[in-house]
Length: 69
Image (cartoon, rainbow, N blue to C red; front, side, top):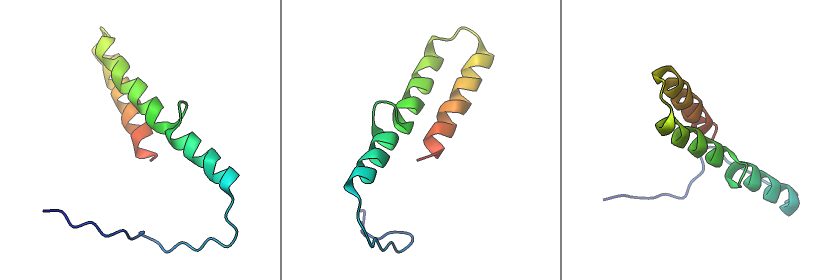
């Protein structure tokens, strides 16, 4: 069984919310050119590479992109 607590790791106090900036940040992380999309592209490309060294590089880069999230 899972227990989910909606609690941030660090307390956040936003004095002046900025929806335009929030939209830009969300797009940068999860949009078509975001971190998740880049990681998925790198990890999918590794399956079509004939050389094992290139597969290793794509795995490393894709894993690093996922670590940015």
